[in-house]
Length: 82
Image (cartoon, rainbow, N blue to C red):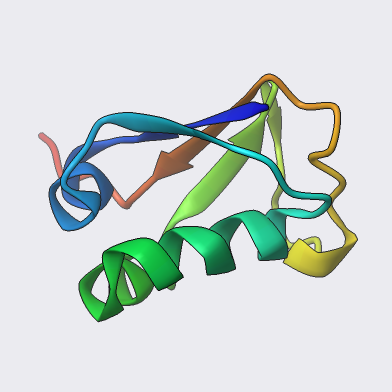
């Protein structure tokens, strides 16, 4: 099981701060989350960054990011600040 932890706008769109899921790739993990939480989450995920067990995903294709053994995936929308 991988904990998918949502922050800021992603948390609001998902309606939860975190949830446990099982998937082989980041793409599968996110697709399952969108299937459960809907288009608002899908829109937010399109602008998010992802960190798998402390390692940033960066520009890697999500279907190439293995999460089958991951403990934690952080979903980080862009943050505003000053």
